[in-house]
Image (cartoon, rainbow, N blue to C red; front, side, top):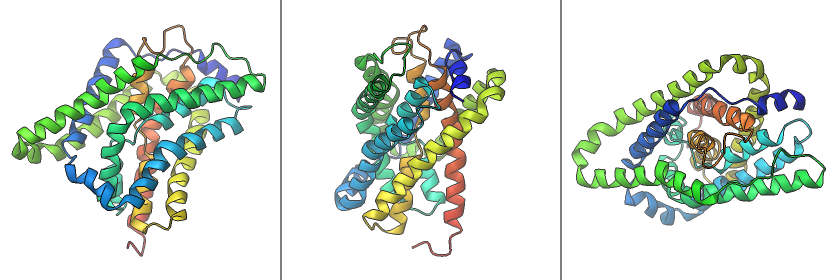
Length: 316
């Protein structure tokens, strides 16, 4: 399996500058829409219900990167360094833009889900680059100790990661909050259509990207599918386990599970295709495939979990 994935590492996906621009605009548009739903009360809810909120924050920004690192360590004989770093990159990203929608379908605690999304959106400006750099370097140090040769050491410009995250997440969120404050009535009319459109359009971009690289997709999807499935399983299990350990209400457990297992992989793709962060000569095929497939898989996994929980006999 590792030999096959090594071939994947050398592949540069067919994703031109025009496609990257569309992806950047789409993700910024999505975050603008997310900001239209953020309220001051969302942050106040963190203090009103601190136990569940703190558990959710720890699960997403601390435990998920740790668990991802451990999974990558356990699988290091079967996966390549770039595939592992792709998993770590996804884990460093904030919750996905559909997490609130999934929590609603799953009959979870919507207020908690929205509060965690609001916090994650702001905190990711700092925690996403820091988590990726810290755990990425921890993994490369581990590989050096076990004698695995790397193409090159992990040397990512932290300032460029921060700037990219701010432009794609921070600035659109700020503009969205200002728009909502200035045009409250218009916001109420456009927020739901924007959410539906943005989710569908983002999904379409991911699907088109796979179609443009279908020869690679057909060859490697069975390996990528298994790895993303394993990673996502542990992500969802981490959220549910920590919430259960602290004996949180059932609805809170559901929302924390979803917030931990639904990641904004679109941000990961934007970072990967930024040549100031990952130069063209850097082999990132494994990272790109893992991150891109997450964009599809977390929707399927989230909807599946939501369906099961929505049909559960007891939802209180």
